[in-house]
Figure 1 (cartoon, each protein chain N blue to C red):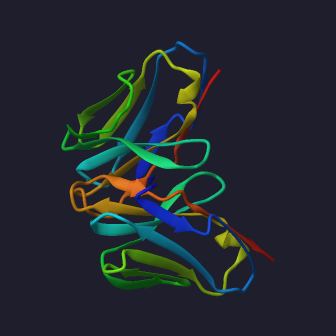
Figure 2: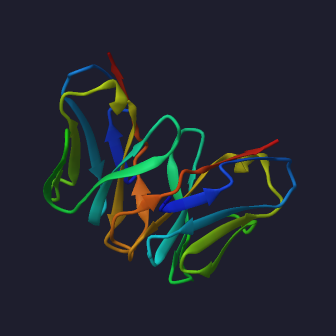
Length: 112
Length: 109
């Protein structure tokens, strides 16, 4: 069983569209994260949720909105996609904020 | 300047060589992570440590809190070790991870 699963793995879409990336973890973790990896392979945190509550919200455009329906899911919705949103987005989870993090396989988003 | 600096950025080795990747950080931390990202893109957590040394198979991670420095060693390197190795720190002020820029390791047969 996949511990942290993201869907889709690849997403190609046109500028201006709205899209969602889903993330689910079956580890019983209470903290979930979204990270963005740019073309230079640099990872940066976007959001963190603990028990469905937002605890970290980095300087991310309002077009990005995370939604956590329950502790096991953290979805990322992106409105009005722009070319600069093209990147690989990683979901991760951990038990509390100070334990090992488990990563999903990543979603490669390409905006054309 | 990034809070987490890794060196070298790129490293090419011959199979069997001993490899060291370094990580320096400038903030107070509660833990440091070493991650591995394979060419396929998936990220795997290798170690989480807050003091001393940890070993898993051919991999060894050490940390010196006073010097704000950590090293990842690979003994008897193998082509399958080729990947990007990423250092990340969790600051004492919160739960976020701050990442280094990664070290691209290529091990040639």
